[in-house]
Length: 444
Image (cartoon, rainbow, N blue to C red):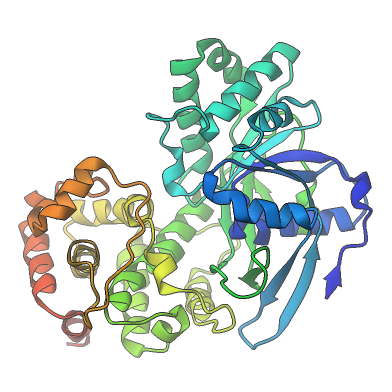
């Protein structure tokens, strides 16, 4: 085991983080743990803010261990390194003590608020008391009164995640506390960032244990109004423009995860590495990345795109992390809008071959509307950001109405007869028949 050797009693929480889940503890905490181990600056520990009722078990388990936990980093060759992570030096649970979180936000010690609240967590229209928007607004009012600027940094998989964060929070501030909104215009920064590390859900061992792959990447726009940790010393890349990195990652890695998840789950696959061992899916993903996505990818500086795509397939095949297909299927409403729709929109405008995308939407229709796999297994659907209108559409079981589901609404798919025809044919076929037809057409 690789243990930290710094004195945690000397570490100050310069960062408040909302969403202390597995990814956060495999990514940001991993980097900060390395930085603290260098001993140069102990002012960049983390205080975790947990605000949901469902956070109770993890909160109490982490609290019992004073925030210390084990992170197992797994290589594809089977090698494992176990790290003892000590950078999480504070924890608060809003259900138990909301004022403690507000106080942490307001503290002069806190320089950055970081977020992993999922792709769908940035909708502030109906945000209420106890939401992340409510907490931040309360804390910023106190910072405003004290003249303390701050940075809010999203660590979620969103295109232009900083811009999205700014729009969401500023919209809430303008509606609920206009004076805070005005102050925030010049005293709060929202850097864009791109995060990457595959971190599956773990069900064995302690609830605090985290398992992840050995690949890790973080590219961050250098726009911090109140200071930042020198994370470039431990491998984080700071840049003036994150766009090419985030577009490449979201449209290739995340979209490919979405593409493989629904059809493979319908066929009964449970683990992602098993899906990648099936040549049909490897060929499907390679075709999708090369033909459908690559024409729209601006290659980031220093990146060999061919090698990047090959590396993705190797990462997906890593049996050591045994990522669950069901995890990838969760929260599709939010994921489609971010990962798939931007590229599909461009493809439709240019009249490109959209068979793969029609196949994916047909698989998603079967997953949500039929609710069972091809072998009859009932699907436990997890869609936390579904709208009431979407629920009605899904309940109707109408495949044409499904094309107007909220993530697809802007595409106006009903006006794309060729796409609709392919989509209906894929619904009528088994997954295997659909894959054979897509790959068979390419081979011809």
